[in-house]
Image (tube, rainbow, N blue to C red; front, side):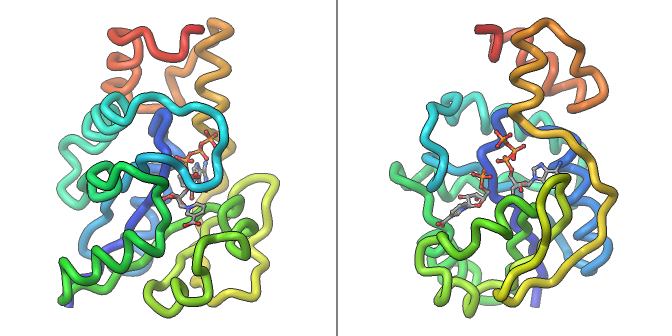
Length: 188
Ligand SMILES: Nc1ncnc2c1ncn2[C@@H]1O[C@H](COP(=O)(O)OP(=O)(O)OP(=O)(O)O)[C@@H](O)[C@H]1O
Ligand SMILES: O=C(O)c1ccc[n+]([C@@H]2O[C@H](COP(=O)([O-])O)[C@@H](O)[C@H]2O)c1
């Protein structure tokens, strides 16, 4: 059986926090691949997100030349709110010989009780929790914890820093920074 870690996210924009956890979880759990999976409409975020075409282009730029990383666009093909339960049911049908691990940061671990059909979802997929500053990994749901260096970067921090003219040089890959500049994202 192939072992695949899924890092679902909004990736508005993708950053080194995403890449760091993907890399460490893959090594630690001996996974074959990590699939970065952008959502179409995030289930729990109310504010407007950047068009999915930009978000997926930035993800491709972020994972280019990484043989174990790929971008999975299944949620973009379903033009609706991206509930993970629905996605995992589809992915398991499409890939019957793959074991899926769903990677989440501490903020999402704390939010697990509110996830759509969570009691069924935990039977379908193995959740993997990683620490994030300001959040605990305490939960009654069955998650595996992987210890990764805690890195206080977030997409919102990057958006705020670009808007206020601060440097983001060491927070996300150069190719993603170039894409953001060329497309004048996050300036207003
Ligand atoms: N620095 C980080 N450390 C650990 N986990 C992270 C980190 N950044 C993101 N994640 C996790 O990656 C997944 C996708 O995150 P997402 O794309 O929403 O980025 P974000 O930085 O949380 O965005 P925003 O600041 O806009 O909420 C989530 O499970 C989130 O918890
Ligand atoms: O299915 C749900 O109810 C659900 C609730 C919150 C988050 N998620 C998923 O968790 C991943 C991280 O979410 P986000 O909003 O931090 O990008 C992403 O794949 C979301 O679709 C899923």
